[in-house]
Image 1: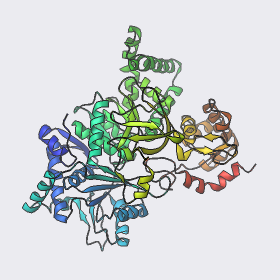
Image 2 (image 1 turned 45 degrees about the vertical axis):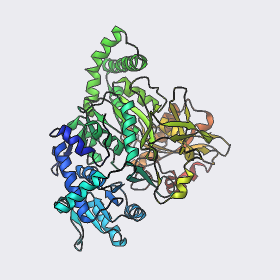
Image 3 (image 1 turned 30 degrees about the horizontal axis):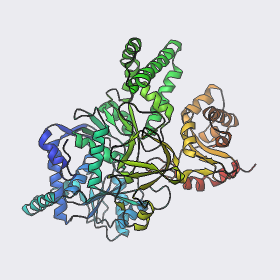
Amino acid sequence: MAYYHLGEIVHRQALKYRHKTVLKYQDPDGKWVEMSWKTFSEKITKTAQAMAEMGVKPGDNLGIYSQNMEKYLITDFAAYANRAVMVPMYATASPSQVSYIAQDAAIRILFVGEQFQYNNAWKVQQENSQLEKLIIFDRQVVLKADDTTSVYFDDFIATGDNSETIALVNARLKQLREQDLATIIYTSGTTGEPKGVMLTHANYLKAMVIHDQRITGMSDRDLSMCFLPLTHIFEKAWTYYCLHMGTAVAINRDPNEIQKNLRVVRPTLMSNVPRFWEKVYDGVQETINNASGVVKWLFRDAVATGHRHNLAYRNEGKRPPLGNRLKFFFYRYTIFYLIKRVVGIDRGNFFPVAGAPLSDNINRFMQSIDVHLIYGYGLTETTATVSCFPAQGFRIGTVGKVMPDIEVKIGEQSEILVKGETVMKGYYNKPEATAEVFTEDGFFRTGDAGLLTDDNEIILTERIKDLYKTSNGKYIAPQMIETRVSEDKYIDQVAVIGDERKFVSALVVPNYEALKSYAMERQIPFSSVEELVRNKEIIDFVFAQIELQQSQFTSYEKIKRITLLPQPFSMEHGELTNTLKLRRKVILERYHDLIEQMYAC
């Protein structure tokens, strides 16, 4: 397998694949169109030349503030051809977040996506004199009346077609260095201010090498759905790996359209966070529970058959018995196919999942219905993957085996420590913070607690900073409790409270639609969601559902009191990070009075 610097990878692949499709994306009318490797390479070259014409130099930091789109990837690889550094920002970022990153990374040129990003970036530009130019991807964006510096992307790439910039870009392509910075990715900042993680081209290249050694069964015949934000290291590294493999990528532009787009594109691969699979699981369980007697029996027998076939036999390297193979073959092309077809994953090969804890029950269920999840663990600072499931021989309850050439050991407070060529160079402009996260012998401190099995598998237990200590001196792991409780179909989100408290409580966001149906079936009157979540009968019912989910917890881990919330936690209110993790500090402040009421008596 050949390995290419990110500045040249697309051009090298274009020589091999030429007119084969590399990207699928939606035009302004929503129609899916295709781009060949040859066209992709040509657009990257034109964009690289336009950057050079604009004065972009090796080592310059270029910002990108956009949702996923084909121009996002073109910009990335054009920057790498100029030995420039890409600094991505989440499409949902506020002006203050954009301003912080733009100033910290000294960004002069910012590529923006749609009207929302342009409006915010324009505001930042008025307050930040170093931000000189906005380059706009979406031609439909309406410019401010006094904007004389911004330019549309299509106009921008037409500016570099001259002999000087052609020669300059070609010279830079000859000078590509693996130790050059590729990206500065700012962490979402659950605590404290964001830190810019510096990843080199060598980090990304090593990530490709170790994934080639671990992942089997992927080829240039696959099609991957790019759904997570390309700002997220998981999606960015995975998409780059797909291009390394010659795998086509379908770009989902609007996260709210993913369900519809999955059914249209029907990808064979897709990286995602556990939240997506929780929703799929809830939908399938709802279908099973509402089925008639015979159909419900068939569903459950299919799951049991799939569990034996995929987990008890195939995963253990054993040949399933003939009877099990025949039943599995029947269910695979009937019940399993219908379930997957509804979601749009009926052509599925496998699906990487990481970014948060995945319930063992949901993982086991998905494997049983022939949806092959590759569960893993990683961080921005480790160029994503530290560990992941192998194709065979994985263990539910772990986050997979440590990747080849990556060294993991367990430090104080059971902290997972990582060393290897995928570990970051450091935090941008933060030498002290960089020094703090590395041990004397060069291991990166992940901040996650866990165990290492004899088979070099990681069992992830908790974020060390998230561990709560009750006033009785007992330690509890809120993520573990939240993951288990949220398996219930009536519960959407949970924030566990308990640090320095005498018992554990929780703020609960119910599944409003499921709860409304329950209330109507039992003729419980309500005129609004607010009235519904205040109803004592409803509160008692949800608490009873929680009790069922926490039957295996020790007494001090169990939730003793709950408050149902009439609106979900959201990024807009600052309660969730861009990767949908809880911002506990914000939640504690915002719901302070409700929390105090749970401990008042």
